[in-house]
Image (cartoon, rainbow, N blue to C red; front, side, top):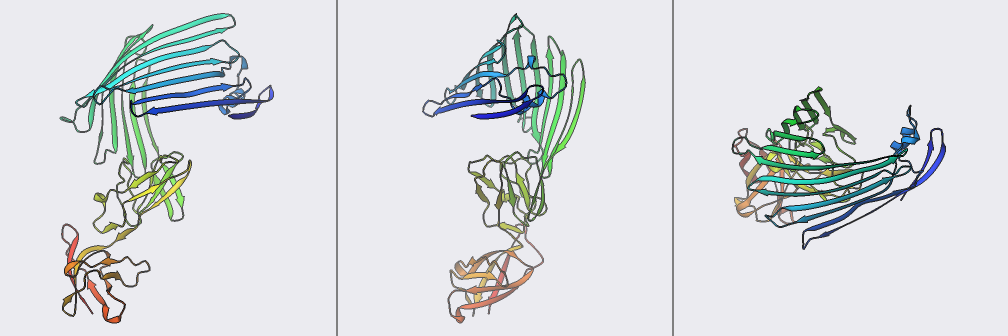
Length: 419
């Protein structure tokens, strides 16, 4: 329930209430989803913020204010089986204060796919009834549409051909055919080309639009035309987060997002996030994280620089609505190698621990069979501490220097004499 106190222009103070009831249920056994998506009741003196601001607009008259009184929505979605598609049905009814206007709508659709080709049909009936100043009107329209989308991967990777036909009664028939797809290494660029024709109204029309999503923001551009106008559009948008470690630029994000920290790991792609990579310092932002749900933030380890390793590649977050949560990844930056350790001419015992000297946060490495151990984050030269017991006779040090030549896989083979 919402209470609103408003100061309406030329009317003084008012107060009103709005009540919304929502209910939904999933029946997993039958593949059915049922929802009363929105039932709303408002008193006649309830004003939302946009409605209140309109009263202060020049030329506003309360006689023409259309305020919803009751609104009921019902939706039903039914999955018909793995290859039989899905069917949906929706009902809408809405009436208004101060007038006898009423809107009613019924729509149904069927969607399916075969060998990658998606298609669907829909039908809707809409009625808009009103009785304003004694003039009764009852406008009705019926709309039928068919759409099909076919992949063109055999000839053009990550692209689809689309066709839609819509017939309205009373009204016109419109056709729309186009191509759409994604391009570049991580599908950063989305594009759409469309040509349409309507028997009434705009006649021939068309558009070409592109959207590029990158590490530091999003850029859009487009061109469109019809019989009455030509349109050229372009724009750029992004997000900025100021935090204790500096400033991070990103793609635009909504109320909830995640700040990713993998310091030293630059240019690392995030899984299932188009165009989202860590910046030159190892920071980025995952936009539009679902609030109150567990979300996995995962780095694509195949895009790690050769001199970077991660202790963990996935972090789980559960943000509240409007929060910026912190997902920190511990990155080890430096050389990688497999070192064979010997002590007094014998391999260092299995299970011995190896740490790098003079490090505050020492990460331990476990020696395997034949004295071999995998090491990462190595400096060009340094000292390793090896221990396999508490006594001084079971501790030793290794001074190492990494060779300048690095193999293609980035892992050097080293020998270390422990003294």
